[in-house]
Amino acid sequence: MPAPQCASCHKARAALRRPCSGQALCGTCFCAAFEAEVLHTVVAGRLLPGAVVAVGASGGKDSTVLAHVLRELAPRLGISLQLVAVDEGIGGYRDAALAAVRRQAARWELPLTVVAYEDLFGGWTMDAVARSTAGSGRSRSCCTFCGVLRRRALEEGARLVGATHVVTGHNADDMAETVLMNFLRGDAGRLARGGGLGSPGEGGALPRCRPLQLASQKEVVLYAHFRRLDYFSEECVYAPEAFRGHARHLLKLLEAARPSAVLDLVHSAERLALAPAARPPPPGACSRCGALASRALCQACALLDGLDRGRPRLAIGKGRRGRDEGGTPREPGRVRTPVPEAVPTF
Image (cartoon, rainbow, N blue to C red; front, side, top):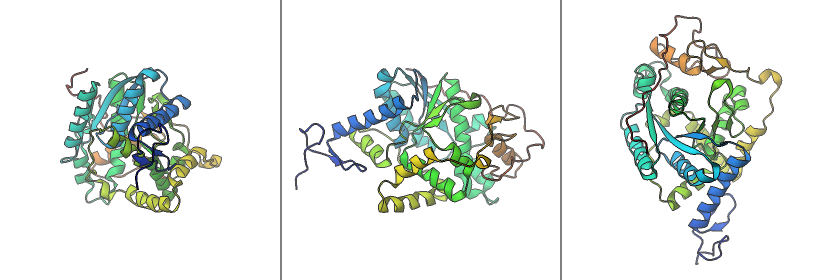
């Protein structure tokens, strides 16, 4: 049976049916529609008002698609882009991903800065964290450690390049998985902070947003295919141990029964109303590094403190207090100012 005509241009043959709407489109019209929807998300949400934007570039499909779309939309949005990549120190994985980022930066003539855990966090890499937590019962929580440290590293890299905003490539499936995880954990505080398209930058932190938050993972992959984007697609060596994998599996089952489940969960987080007693307290400043924190110590300092003492603990989440907040202080300036890699600025 021949493919139907594109429902948009009525000239070319359709190359796909959009997963959510079922609309038959050719590759060119699909890419144009995808870009228009991202533009609408950014403009309607007033996410990037004339900003210097640090794009969290991991080399994967989501950040690659995000960087490509924002580069296409930059003249209309009045923004300039800086790629910021984080080297977590994961042997046999991160080097290949960073190579993809460098190829992208060269091809698109965008400036690239790489910041490393090892430089920022007193020699700690994710491989070292994994070795340290192997006998502690926390070896399955590498992604939690990495998520906290990566957020801090991206913030430091963005400040280094003079960015006014940070954008990440989280898509609708990523956000729905996070909502499910927080429901399963009963973590009301994180549910309360998870709505919207980003954070406004309270407490001196840079504003963050997720322009792909309403785009399904399937459409992100389709966009990368039709635009012939070069990206790194292997899974992190620590990902199979993560709790997120269970939420991802559950989400696939829900989506099979109800195709709108992904966006339903994303919008539920936006509209969630909590009782006053369940709302998180206003954030303050970390007593050690000055970063935004909901307790005396920020998450990054609490985790690093436990690692330095040889007693790794997560020290985050529902009903947990900061890790020995009144104990022996870590050395001043532990979260260090990053030194950018010597990558040419185009």
